[in-house]
Length: 507
Image (tube, rainbow, N blue to C red; front, side, top):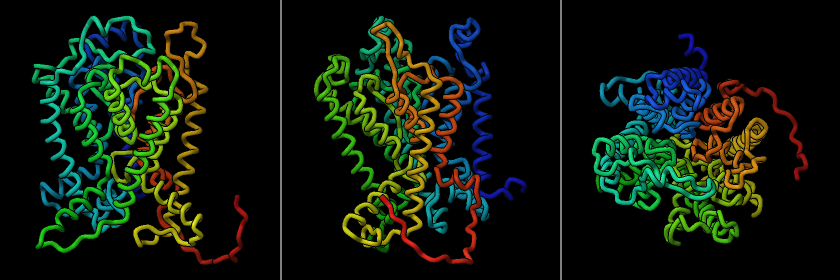
């Protein structure tokens, strides 16, 4: 009762924090570590502090995917299962999952407080449809999870494209050169148990848009040329990132084509979300192609022969541009991309995908509303409209506030992380990676957008930098409007006084 008196938002926040700390304790516990990792810690060969465990727990429960250590080599099956469950529960929403189980399996009635929890966590603006949205959306995601697990199992088991070689993985390459090879012990080909384990983990992370992998230390790089794996990964990430209200709208629209069903009108939210996603993705893709194909640096992505043919490079650009929207898987080394591309992809991660989904960022609808307001100003309209619908001033003000606060968070995050991180900028070794502000910005936007695209710089972060990213990851997953309400009042105050209107010069 004490927690419930705090209000819905504060209750959700406290439960999220408690779960994150609980997960971190398990991940810090040696029982979840591999034998080799425990030995390395004892011999001081690697550093693994509680902050690292907390960072990984926050990253898992917020469906981000950033990690300071390799999951495959550091955590045993129990530890990996714990991370996968954290990703699944965090993605579906712990209160949403609770309501779904009580409602669907046991047929229990949901009280007002639980209904409010799910509406904030994964519902829509229409509270009356929240229960229906949860039932349809969670069922869709769980069925999709099962189907993709089967697909990925076959791919991992039969794929001839996996790059696993002890010799190649151990070679002393120039760190700026692309090397996708992992050790043979990680190869799932012909091993059904390992293929199934990889498939379950990858399906959960794909559906929930978390960029974790348990293949090795290089995400999906060993499958750089396996286009079937990448295509199904993109499809799974889209289904999870599109949002619960959109899934429900699509379901109702498909049902309405039956003769016995009434016509269903897709909501404005769904239209704005999907159109903005396509529009932003196309712009990001075109800019990425432009910046990469015109690069003169011999170590840049497009100029390295290790990345294969023009088709292979083009597909890699498409895959990386799409995964920056929320999922965070990589088949290339982001260090090889130009700084212009890093900036473009940072913006894509900052935008994110859909509200009420596993994605983070300021969300597509926010960008759409701000863009429409600019168009309205340019054409001299006093109202912001779309698809013969007027968008209220409250929504516009909220969108602008979310955008401004998001920019502020990213700037503060970059400043703190940059000032407390070892960037190897003064290294005299020419083959070492040297990081700068663009790489810090990329990581911070990756945390804010719950994307989790690795840059290889997280181990260099200090405790202050990691704590900063933890806070940003939690805000990115919970959402800026909800985070603001944690410290304020959720109830609208009555405005008994109206003041005299006066224009203020802007610009």
